[in-house]
Length: 147
Image (cartoon, rainbow, N blue to C red; front, side, top):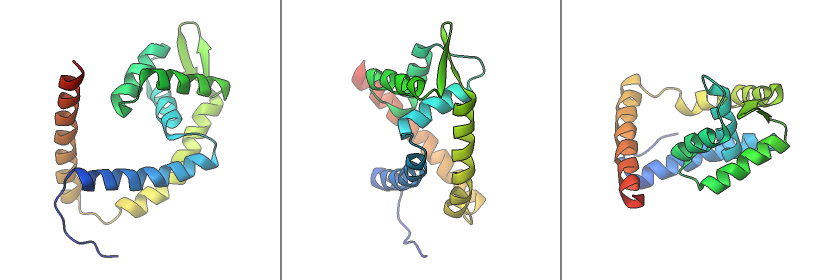
């Protein structure tokens, strides 16, 4: 497969994001979980300490820019699926939730290797710097618009 050299812009970024997300969503669908559920569950699993529901809402909103009410509904769905459990003031991932994320990770690892494999490290480093800068600037613009 050959690619035509192009400049990075919002369209190229969006196309890459949605192509990769489409691959992930295909895997997630086989396990009956949505992209937003996976992001929220992963946030609970990777937290250094258990988080309150509102702390998870803030974290997921920071990542996805989703409506807080939708994120709360997502947390309720994860509770109903018994992938999260209420523990006092916190939400904790269950063993089933941890296992699901591990299985999804194992299924997506070879796909990710095929997608990312062979890209020179210098290109990945440059792309990483550009994407970090774009993220920072876009977050600043969003904050200014919603202030």
